[in-house]
Image 1: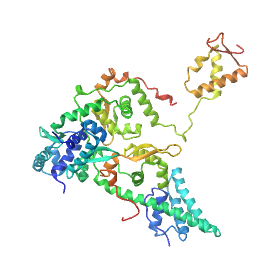
Image 2 (image 1 turned 90 degrees about the horizontal axis):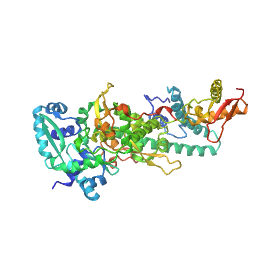
Image 3 (image 1 turned 120 degrees about the vertical axis):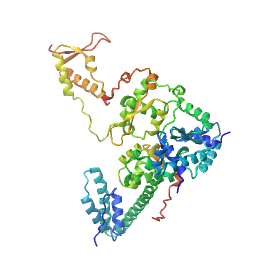
Image 4 (image 1 turned 30 degrees about the horizontal axis):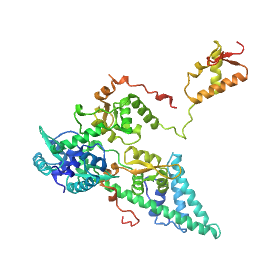
Length: 229
Length: 169
Length: 169
């Protein structure tokens, strides 16, 4: 018996499995699990997806099916466990099917959608009390919205930062034209990480006796000088 | 002396967002109880007319009546957005029946990551964040919105078709 | 079969400007004569309710009934006197800095539906529709209003405080 169901697109692994079950009139039982697993794997092989995340979701269920199938190969204990796993899978499929049906009902309902009013009733400008907002608050609100719109993705690329070598080079280059105040170095950067890197570079240069850090009296500017200058 | 029910209708007509019955009570100088019963009265009065009242989470909005969807839709050609995909409908169904619900719980039912889908539904205004769950990590909860009820011609959530297993489809 | 009078009511409810009876006739696939008599019928049906139909130079609008003017006005003044919500302020900021901008573009930044916020700001007179975008569907563009500038003592938008959004920290 071959399973042949024409499906245009699957919405997800459970959707695909459900289609195979219903289309092939199979049941999720120990008798048909081998067939079902085969059919499922055949289909995800043909799944034309370049999205690794999407594919992994399909593979996850594939692995689960293979696992359930393999349990029958084990003596005794295996078949109990298989029955249990099959039962669990049936429960999940059943729940999923409920929502699929509910979604279909909702879709039919959307033919009776309702609308709110589109236009706005306005008072005369003279009667409109203007709200009390400061420009600063407006600026803040904009910054907040934009920040939220581009969240720092945990999986995104780590932004390029200054390396210690770069900062070291920058310091030694500047020393070629004489000593300078530490503050002028820090003023260029506001990022915390860049400030830390700058200090690390400076400490390394002091340790290797390439530079000297001088302060005449307390609260005087801190000056960086080249040692051989 | 104009009727309270119609005062409420006039206020709902000019309101830019759904109004909670407490806000309505303040606007008409009445008790919340009076407002609630007048709103029920208004719903009855509007039966059969071109308008209806949608209620969700204690807030009310005046909308076109579901029976007039075809004629209004034809008039509103410009406003139509793309139809919802099957996956979007499924996610909405889960949130409607089970909400407020966390992203994880939705994903457990669907068996797929639902992040992009949720973002899309939030942007369309069909769902909204509804507090956080008490589970560890306090994940956000999602619930359907007024927009959702309007999209599906419901006047409140209790009009959702029953779902418990008796598949008559 | 829904009544013609109420079909017209539903259309007038969603319309953004007064509709001529020819436009109404086209919307409901009827003759101008039928529409005219149904509009008269609608006027009668609405008598005593919170809403009314007004006609001006052959164009019709649905408005709140005159008897309710005091309660509606009181409500609207109290609404506009309230402080802007955080969401409304954010929407206003986006329009100030990025406007003229479409609703969709605002929603892309905010991640949630912004229709309600836009109406709220329109009602308060802080923004106004400023033409349409060239994108498909010609969506409306929104910009801050003259009153907005006055409110902040700005003579033009270039005086808005700069945003150092580029340090991405």
